[in-house]
Image (cartoon, rainbow, N blue to C red; front, side):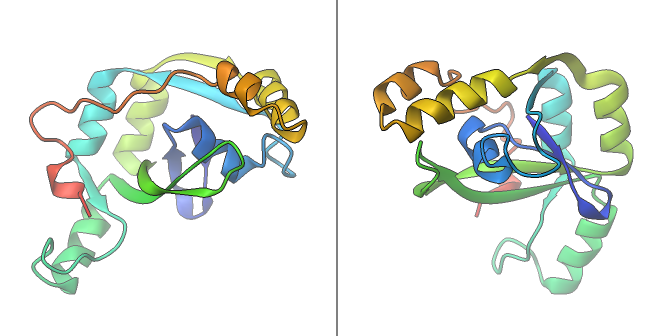
Length: 160
């Protein structure tokens, strides 16, 4: 799933529940439609390989100045935010978010998108089960998600 963002970035949020946290189950003003955007693996790998962490990490970057230069040049950036449970509470593990700008945003829009599906009714159905306290029924409707198997260590330079 993607979400447009300020400062010209388009954010890919591969986690359904992370996206539900951001859009309030498709109820937040201006975020009433939830789209699942399927992109090519090659495109996603390209973005990961050309990404920079969105924040400075001592020990990973030589210094703040080097990180700032990398961030300014990178067509993609990675943030790691807490994953969410069905009640949208933070979990102890993190979920990747991938921000695209410039060349990456153009490639995403023009070449990487394979399919776009309106999942708003699904988001509303799951949310209704959650509101009713039927978490088992809600869980049954969740899209299947698996840890992302990376090729050639494409996430190695982006770990926290």
